[in-house]
Image (cartoon, rainbow, N blue to C red; front, side):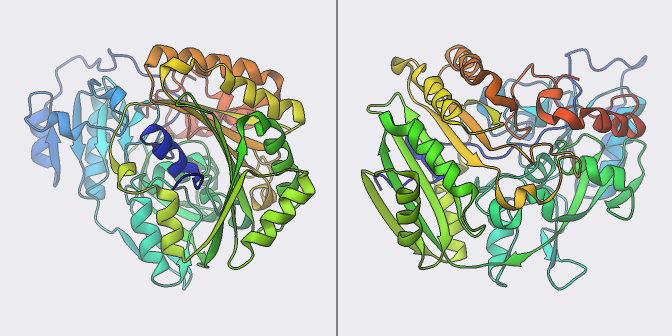
Length: 481
């Protein structure tokens, strides 16, 4: 399938796989001495209270129970894992953690870029066993899902009824992590972020209270849950979304010489910002495994792909070296962007992000400069550029915790190369963007970053809400305060 590469599929096929949106928690950093109770915790008593399963480091299933998608964190050492099968289990686990002064890691899909689903020294509350899955919501166009329901299941079941929610592409990502961090994806320009479709969320607060946050009840919690990162206020037990009609789409793949990548990024973005909202697009650049590649992917209304691509090329003054258009129904469209079965296999990777404030020609070239700094002998690396235009901006920057409503684009950096090389490259990439970067996307976090980098002007309000509901810092995320 040369030259025909989608956002997540591009990275997986070029580099061997990509994790999608991440599950991460609040802005607490965690240390190995997170357990500090005056007496040893009575794990036997906790296990006897649960409907689900308790796994300790001495348990035969501990390694499996604490496993996360990014195998870089396979050596993590949480103090225990509670596989919850009821909301009552979540409440009991939270009460036990609070009594024994143990931090909590919430796990849904387990795709956090920094291993936040199983942090050292924490009690992991694994939500994959909660009953419910995908169920009809309170209205005809609503759907309620449990937090660890994977995106493929959500989209496939909704498509059977001709409906969808805006979401990302990695098939095994839990819907909670994606939603609570914002939720970029191929429906963003016409439907907004995943969190914009959220109408309510049920959660257990650190004090054990079960609440349903919405615009009408616990509206401060609801604000924080939409873009502030998963697990930051409490542990989510279900989410309700409004749905949108599912439609057939054309997918157009345009290839450009890597030498023209800067012009392609700038021209694509200027054109897309003024284009019909039913059109979405991204740019992928990969280097290090042979000749560099630059690919523009467009998703358009069915039957319009070739004409839309022609308009983009003409308006932007670009010339593609190849072009291919295919028409896909909703399920095939979702599966195309998932990237196949390889996307389900855990892997070790290093990734990060920048939010580009204005996609000027200089900013576009800085992305190319960052990619050119990649050491060719180290394997492959990729950058994925997604526009923040269209419906993403219908909500003001202060309307939810997700702050990047008036910026131009998100850039995701990704590689499966050795950690030291990858980390140095990420640092160089941020430096290359310089003042063009306004911050980062919280679903693509980097170890050691402060929360301010991801929440920008919304940090103070977020911290006020967090302090109100979690004054002792029970919830942990791996992101510094």
